[in-house]
Length: 162
Image 1 (cartoon, helix red, strand yellow):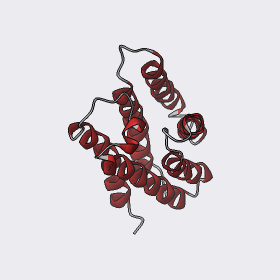
Image 2 (image 1 turned 45 degrees about the horizontal axis):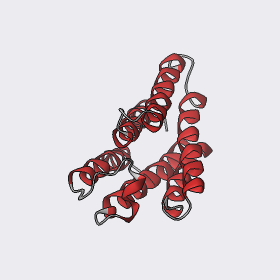
Image 3 (image 1 turned 135 degrees about the vertical axis):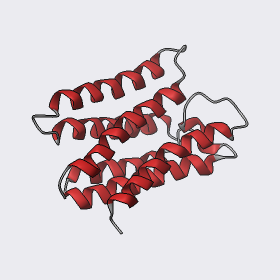
Image 4 (image 1 turned 45 degrees about the vertical axis):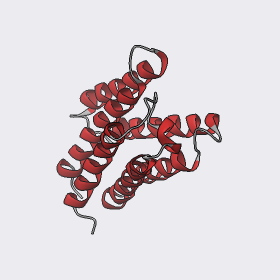
């Protein structure tokens, strides 16, 4: 059940769900979290569910505790709806993204350290840019940050020994 192919499919589905969410939208909302109460919120929930499953399986396969916390954080983002508790939602999202980026650096080898730091800075930088600058669409900044982390994680799936 915890094969490399399963984890790859989960990560691909995690990246596809926001795109389907965007294509099937009825309103132009700023962020992914803004779609939590929309008519097509199925894709928003599916994205977090697939990401959570990926990180829980990755934690079991690699025996790395931070991956479990990222998986629980993805579930926590769903539990803290931005329309009900926006501050808590933003804090949980920031902690989850921070933990994902920290794991990229913390679990890297000396050979990959500089590229992982660069990818981490890119993921955080694009996310913050989308959050703070109106001319950068936050939805796509979030998606691009997810893509950077996903590329790193798929690399971890196939290159690291299990």
